[in-house]
Image (cartoon, rainbow, N blue to C red; front, side, top):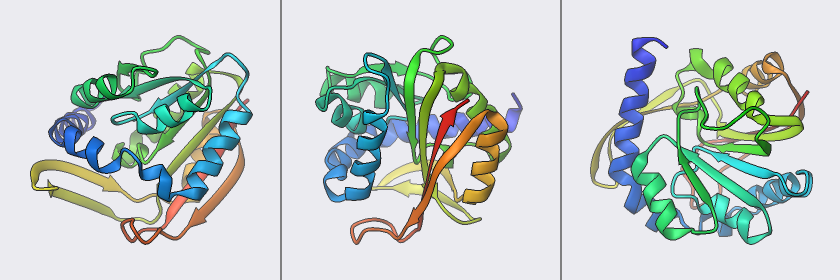
Length: 215
């Protein structure tokens, strides 16, 4: 674990701690305006082995995990930010929350039937993405699905302020072909790949989605 990577994760942790309350208040119902995301989550849920848990990696305050829980899933939210985890626990008692790092997930081998990481890997140093996907594979059961989404492109956007709060966080835009290759190298078969334009209420970036199955 290099110093730069550790420093980057500390900055991400502090930044999301800072905006946790406002993030939850602003985005708690964001799925209501994202029909494609709801469809993909429903497909993930329908293909997850009955009785197994779904991990929401980089869950933030847990609204996506809660949406799945409302539809019968057993969900575990994992986030780097202690304040996000605390906010989620207060808002969504039906979801189990764990504080944790995607490079060392707080779960045993094969603990989950499926996993998702929605706009989570955009905060990972590009050189660490392969290790993250290998770790996700570790905690999935054989045949488990992994849904990942991100902003597409090749730029890095940095925020010093977010909703009026001082932060220090980078957003890495990613190439879907590269991400698909890294998933395959980590032991996933990529079953679905798509991109969409932003909805009117979203930031003006193209969104990429990949669905991989653990081999």
